[in-house]
Length: 375
Image (cartoon, rainbow, N blue to C red; front, side, top):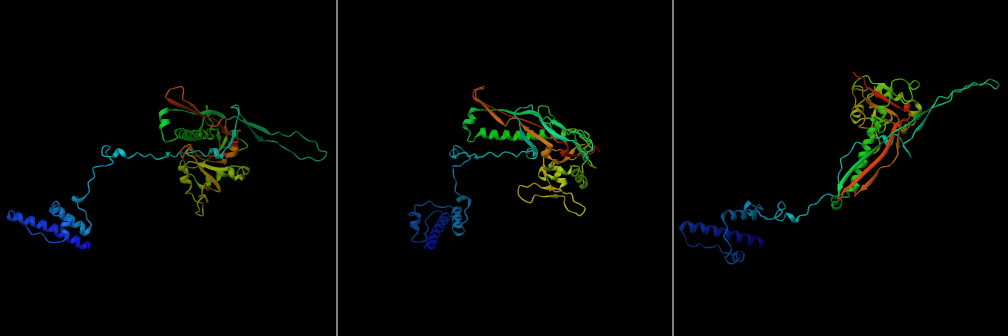
């Protein structure tokens, strides 16, 4: 039934078009319409508007194949791009979270010894051993032996601070918790800044970094306390497997035996070179972590990437190896504190955030450095 109705409609349209063409050719007159009992029902008794040939052909194509010509495309006057055409009724949506860029965080806090201090006048005593002993029989005389020595480590302190402000309106109207977001960003900034000081801090109102400590290539028994031992690489921008072994073995066995406290520290660019090194049998020295969250290992010890370490280059220290729990001390005088001040500048809220921290080399026998030659 539906197919017959469609055929009748097409016949009616075609009859109208043919009659119009014949009238134009004769200069007037009437033409006989194709008969179909459904024609009047579809045309509304002959009062329907006449279709142009292009429209009739487009309608025919649509009924036959489902293709819609340009003339039959719907046209909407309302669109989202114009406020006066209805776009203003579409609400603006902002994501409920703020995506922050990642920051290069220092691994020193998880490697070193961290202590709390109640005053900035803080010192750490390091036993240097040095006691001597002897053998004696029952009646043999006893001589005075050497007593052990002690060293004092006095970390240098400084205060990290951020002094930011925001209007009270933005804090009241924002759909985000801007104060929490600000505190999180400040904590990240403090971690990045103090991490850099633990490596290269000069001790002037900041921690003293282990890379700025005195360095010498002499052995443990002859170096002064507080001086780190260096091992020289053969090339300015290369490292060999033998040099890695030499650096590792300069650390005495008691330090290396505490494997959970030992680690290699190097930059990402240095790590990309080291992980390609192989031994004489073609095996990689580098081994990726066996489980999620575990660091890779080099010669059996974990590797920590730190972008505060210099890369390979003339006179650069590109790799450090050591027992970091014994080698470096971090002292927190205060935790991060935020003071909120809505009074000093009306209409604005100021946030003063500060954190006092110190750091220095503790046992200088516990850290070894690989240094590259000048040429």
